[in-house]
Length: 547
Image (tube, rainbow, N blue to C red; front, side, top):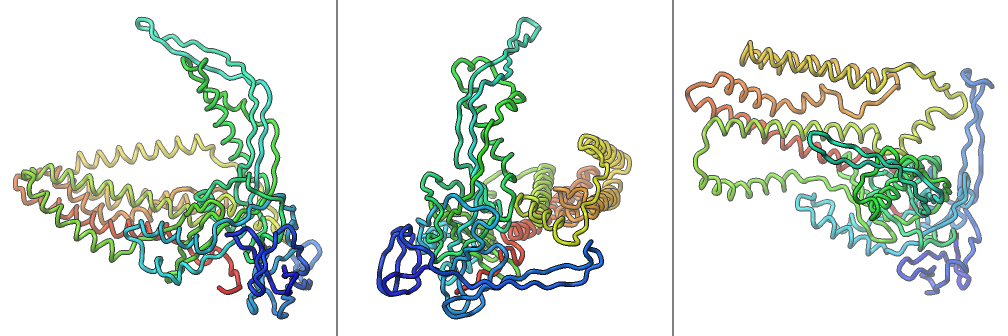
C-alpha cells in the first residue's frame, strides 16, 4: 500500500492531475517520489492428496492467502490479481510479490481519463443507440466503472536489409496478352515500435482491439505507485502469442509503402513475394495500460463496456430492447404503408418473388448470426483465452499427456469432399423439383435437407469430441431449426410459383405466409443479436472492494 508521509493515510493516484492525492490531509505527491512501504501479509500453505495417476503417487496443492495490513481481513484475489482492494476496509493494495512473477513489466501508461469522464463518454456512446435497453443508461450503472491496469505485450520490430520482390506488368498486343516480369531489388530500413496486444486471457480480444491503440510514447518506467487506487491483472499468456499477428501488420505496411513508390506505379508487385519482408529483429516488452471497465448484469447475461483510460475510446456491447424495437417498427410502418399506397399495384407474381427474396435474406442473416454465436461460445475469436485453455489442459501434476496427433484429412481435401457432397445434394434437390414439383420441393425441404444437416452436425460433433478441430460454423441442424419459420413461407412460395395457378389469390396467400415467416424471423434475429452482444456468467472473476 502507499501511505501519505504527512498523516499516514492511504493515498491513491488521481488521473486528472497525474498525482498521488491524500483525501485526508489534501496532500499531492509525485508518483515517483512515493515508495510502497508495505504489502499485504502473505502466507503460503501446502496440502498433499493421494493421486494414483501421478508419477509420485500424490498431488500437492499450494494456497496463498493475503491479509490486509490495515484491518487484518483476508483479501479476495484470483491467481492473476496484482492490484486490488480489501473487501472489508476498502484499502488499496498492490500484491508486489506477483508483479513480475513471470516477467517484470518495463512500462506503464498512467490513467488520464477520470472515472467521471469515462461515465460521460459511455453515456454519450449508449445515447446514440436508439434501441438500447433502459437499464444500460441508469446512473447507478454508470457509477460501477472500475479502473483496471491490463497487461499488454509490446512488440518492436526492426528491418534494415536488402530485399528482392517480384513484380509484373501486363499489356495487350492484338489477340495476345503479354506478361512482363520484374525483379525489384531495394533496401528496407524500417522500425516499428509499440505494437501492443493484451496479455490477459480474461480480457476479451474483441474489446481490447476495439479501444486500441494506446500511445506508447506517453509510457513511463514501471512504478507500482501508479496502480494505487486501481485494480490490475498479471499476464497469463505467452509473449509470442501475437508475434505473427504483428509481423503480418509490419509486412503489410512495408509492402504498401514500397508499392506506392513512383518507380513502381506502372507495375504491380506480387503479393506472394511479400514474405521476404519479414522483420529481421523482434523485441518484446511488457507494459500495463489503463482501462475503465464496466459490467452490466441483466438476468443471466452480462453486457461489457470498456473505455481506453488514455485516449477515451469507448467500446460497448449494446443489446436491443424488444419493446422499443416493436413500437418503433409499428410507428415506422405507418408512413411506409402510406408510401406503398402511392405505388401502382404490383403483379402477384412479382410480389411473390419479392417475398421469397426477403425470406432468403432473413435465413442468410440468421445462419450468419448463428455461426458468430458458435464462435463466441467456443472462444474461437479470442486467441488469448484459447491459448490459456490449452495451457491449462496440458499442465499440472498428474495431468494427462497430450494425445498423439492423428492423421486428419488435409484442408484442401476436406473442402473438395464438402464441395462434391454439396453439389450432389443440390443436383438431387433440383431433380426433385423438376420431377415432383411442389411435392418434390416439400420432400427436399423437410426430409432431404434436415437429414443432410443432421449428418453434418454429427460430423462436427465428432470433431469437437475428439479434440481434433472445432468447426468455425454452427451445427447445420441448429441453423435449420432457426430458419424454419421463413423456410416454411419460402417453400410455400416456391410451390405456388411452380404450379403457377391462374387465380391470384394463391399468390397473395403465399406472399402473406412468406412475409409472416420473415416478420417472425426478425424476432429471432434480434434474439441472436442480443446473444452476441451479451456474455455468459462469469467472464471476469470477482474484483472485491466496493463492488
